[in-house]
Every structure is written in C-alpha cells, then in structure tokens.
Image 1: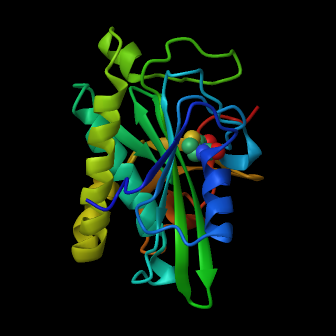
Image 2: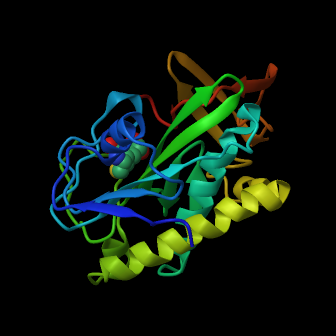
Length: 247
Ligand code: BTN
C-alpha cells in the first residue's frame, strides 16, 4: 500500500490541501503522502467556499500523488478515481443509491455526503503532482443553515461511526482505484458514468452564468458534461453545476 505512507496527522489544521501544497514546494514528498487533520478550520471548498469540519467529526484529508504516467488531457481520471473510492466506501455502510454529482460531489438521497477538491501541478505536458483533497461527513449530524442538503454516515445509519475504520476503508479504496484508472481506465470511467446523479432526467442546470434545461447524458473523455437540450447537445467544462438557481 503506497497511500498513507507517510501520514502527517494534525489535531487541528487550517487546510490539508494548503499544507500539502506547502510540503510539495518545500520538500519532495513521496507519492501516497497523506495530510490528515481531526479539525479543519479554514478548509477550501469549490468556488472559493469554505469546508470546515468540527473537531473529530469527519474525514478531512489530502493525498499527494505523482501521476506522471497520466496524460494531462485525461486528468479528469483523478476525479473519477476519488469519486469511485468515496462511493464504494459510503456504499459499504448505507443501502441507498450512492451517486456522483459531476464533477466532484458524492450524494446519497439527494444530499451531499462528500466533496472533493483536486489541485494538479503541471510541468510542461506532464502531471508533476496531484493533491486530492477529500471531505467526507462521518459523524456530523447538524450543520449551519447555509449548508444546503448535507448528510453524513451517522445521519444515514442513525448511529455514530468508527471514524478510523471508515478512513482505513476509504484509503484502501483510493489505492484500489488509483490502480484501476491506470490499468483499466475505461472500466473506471464506465463505472463513474453509471453512477451519475440525475443522468437521463430532465433538469435545470446552472453553471456560472449559464442556465440550460436538458438531460444529462454522459461525460466525454475530457471530463466534460454532455447535456441534450432542445437546441442540440451542449458541453459543460469542469466546474460546479447546481440544479436549482444558485443563491
Ligand atoms: C467541495 O465540495 O466544495 C469540495 C470540498 C473539499 C474539502 C476537502 S477537506 C480536505 C481538503 N482540504 C481542503 O482545504 N479542502 C479539501
């Protein structure tokens, strides 16, 4: 197992992604290095949002990878890897359908249980490093009002979970899917497509300033969302979509 060797653990840390970036620029951390904290105080979410987590409640960690073998045009496969690893982890505890809301969120019953924030460092046409930041709600059961539709394993299972056991399973799954996207990328890609949230349903989709009504059909090989609309097919570049008008 390469994932988690070494692991730097902090009782409290502003952001595991930030710490991982500092480590990469100051030293040469090996592939698989993890930055983990029990209490993230200034975590980053998508679109400049915050992703904080109460002391000891959730999984908030970042994994440093060196996917030199991955063509930069296929860097979306790292999102696929992280999403599948989280989905498999969550599915081990809950019976409900676990879905991936393109590109980076994991949903159960229309509620978000996990978010992923990936930062890729390029060197020319190669991927020099990738920081895979994962926030997975485990034992949190209440959230500030501004967090829309959150859930957690504890909420879904109606009891508190052994967070160390969940983390161990998650890291095993990351290791597993890191191999799968290298050895059998089309299989991983298909699995991701099958789990797409709201696939084949009519939806109002908002991305930045764009709004379309259409049907999510699939993801193209570059990670773009393909939506069938009345005017024909539209492609969305990787970004964050919402299904209701953003606040
Ligand atoms: C999102 O859904 O908005 C993405 C959330 C990503 C949160 C994780 S928690 C660990 C890592 N460190 C950060 O600062 N962010 C990511």
